[in-house]
Length: 335
Image (cartoon, rainbow, N blue to C red; front, side):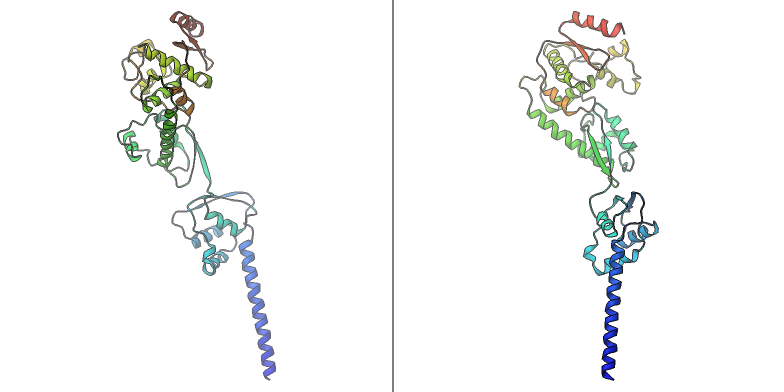
């Protein structure tokens, strides 16, 4: 009798062990099963969502079949369950459930590009930020002064202080994050460029270099011309001539500018009109790139004092007023 009982117990234990092993194998199989996706899909981890909430949501969306398997994993092996990070993630066909939860706890969030082009004004920069999708728009209703105070630059005029480049952001970031990055980059690059300046400059500070660079940026998009334009401006200042650069007139006109400058506009006394004021305007007029910053502190030596647009994005440079007037007749009045 005892032998039969022991045999039955042995069989029971074997069957139990087999059942446990089978159950464990099935559980692991569910964790390793590929996602139920036929094409890549974005998934957003909501702010404040717990692990169980996320796997149930994924099951409801048809991404996984067995939320229970992941809930059990969180109970049995909590160390294998990462802390989920808020953001968007790219789920792909063939990815296993375990690979998916590892992704949801990683830094591999979906990012979006935002390009701040060279030569844009701060007002145009704000429009770009306000139109950027998936970006939290914290500054949309703020004044320029309030934005600079938020960036710990209270009392600083914002124009020119944000470096033009392509920045990447992800869900959960705000326009303030982009502005902080662009401001820090401009300050760093301006310091770096100023340290490599020529010795005989007519500008005396990094901020004046920023102003000069913005004029260069707005005058030409041709890389080979930037240092020559800087040289023209330098020689004009040395000889007491006015800079007479049209972009400063346009900036001083503000929203009144509609694509054309008149003789009356050239004579209008604004703080920025370099046909009227001596020297440079009081602030930058746009966001200069690194090439314009470098040109501002290393002007090209020479004798030219004038330049006029050829109409193809480049300029004709002249040493004398007579030569310049001939060039104006050729490239402007005959056009």
